[in-house]
Image 1 (cartoon, rainbow, N blue to C red):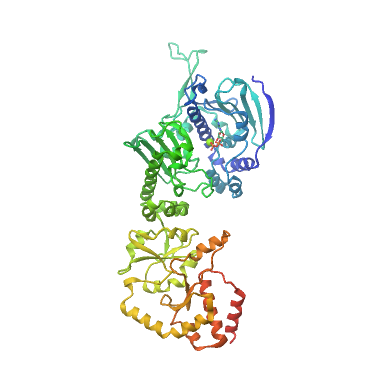
Image 2: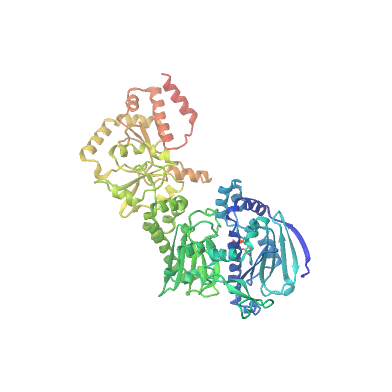
Length: 634
Ligand code: ADP
Ligand code: MG
């Protein structure tokens, strides 16, 4: 019996308590995953020791055969998971098994509702890890010692998962970690040889570290009966125990790829697709990249985990090596194993190594190709797009070289389907372009409905020209980095002169000029009435149903971006819109027939309404209401 000294009882961090509570209740139907999580941690610990031992192989303490062992005791109702990996110091135990250090955790936990199914999904996004042991155990004890430390520096951690845990110093011969689960009454089924073996195969086959289980064998007498007292225990490796990515593609089943994904991505659900490549030649690497089926909780956190798991010649180097993929592909998960970097590479060194840049651009291409392939499956791609589309939209700004490729992967709403679902590609649009149409037209608004009913679309609807409807927060910013697609210019219909190219005949253009001439006088009067509230007044042929609209000069920042900047506290220089009047509208005709105060009121009301239709805010809304009421009561 070990003697424990320096025993103290500490409380779990609030977030851990919340997570424990929710997890135990919402993951009940998924509870076998605890074994995967504990094996995954043991494998990580072995990876870390191998890495640390590169510099100092005394850390192995004479035992360099890394492994995980699983034992059970049906009588006692326990399952033990043991590794001879890196182990933990007392301080590490307290922080690793008492807190959750990831940023955004508190916010994440607030989203949990207490509804089992919903929370199970959310918790899957988060990755439950070590604490999942408490789904099946009512007490867990951990004994560990950091590799290379003194035998007296062992640590024991114990908890019932109810708010506090106890740590104590112990003597421990072996380095590494041993976790004993005291199974709950209704989870005793896990203390079973067959059950444990099949779980290891199901979840941990792909782990490179051997997972071993004891096998008891007896000598036999002449009649084939076991001789009592002759039992010997041998250890049998239960999993495949080769790094999955190093095996030939043809020998790996979809199930194995999926199981491996869950290990690298800390995700519960299956990935949407993956791409496994071995490259030889100037660069030598193997990559296995996955597109997850759902977003991690920290997708938009500045310091959220991203990047690939990096191995150099099969030796684990680091998690989240973010240098190998651009930010706009931060949702991609996977593994990179290369011969081109040295084993003692660090994050700092990665930033300077030119080979890293080369691999990064190769992986970026792989990832984009993988998405292109995924796009052939419309339903799967829609899931991808709804989950990660707004991240991919960051692409054209970040990655100039791949702008065209990314543009091909974007999906939008358009007037063609009039649906808020973003499921149309620019290629779809181009295919439907009319004869004589030379541009791709789009409009940006704050919501789908605002985009769809913008007065700017009237002429396009009349002529049956499709317009891309952009209504995501990032859209105007996206479009400012995307000037053309496949040689066709992209044009904001609410900015600059309206140019429908050859769709408008010469006659039409002439008629427009004549109308403009005929209304010169009116235009002048309106400009006088509105003063410097507008940059210019014109007659327009954009409109069919609305009396007026506002337009911005071609290179001016749009209304959406202005509002975002203003909301972020960035003062924006005032921009004066161009007011365009619909010469055939009854209100414009009425405007022509009045003068004095009524003229001024109506001119102002037309301007204000055009701004409102654009989703803009009026400087003086009360004045608008007053003028409108005055007009309503004449
Ligand atoms: P994650 O594996 O995602 O980091 P876990 O909850 O599974 O989260 O584990 C929390 C931390 O506890 C790990 O990051 C690791 O530092 C430590 N840990 C857990 N199990 C072991 C182990 N068997 N050996 C060494 N450290 C471990
Ligand atoms: Mg883990």
